[in-house]
View 1: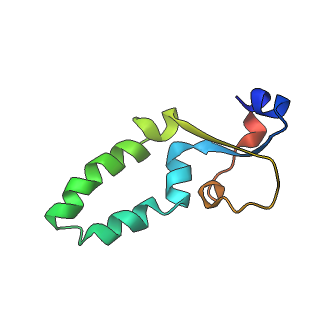
View 2: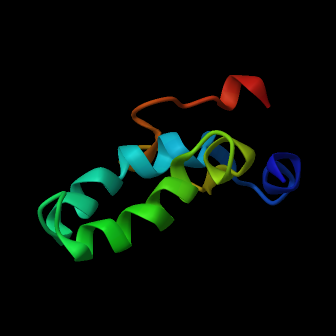
View 3: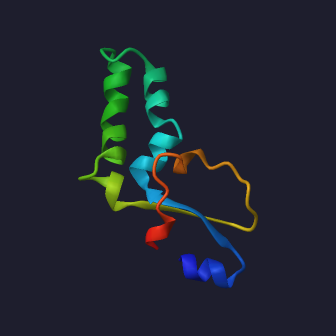
Length: 87
């Protein structure tokens, strides 16, 4: 996908596992905003978040690739582990 983007005039702006990207975007802050850790709303929301972040589930198996035409875009999702050097 990165090579296809390059052929279209785009550059790799970031590449990371889904878990690192979502954590960088504030996934845990969003979960905390649902309610107290002992509340029913929090417990219901925590299970899908765990699936998205777990290395054994989607957290490491899925990757995020961002392609851009210009530089200087703030990508908070890549702050915790940008891995474009591994492409």
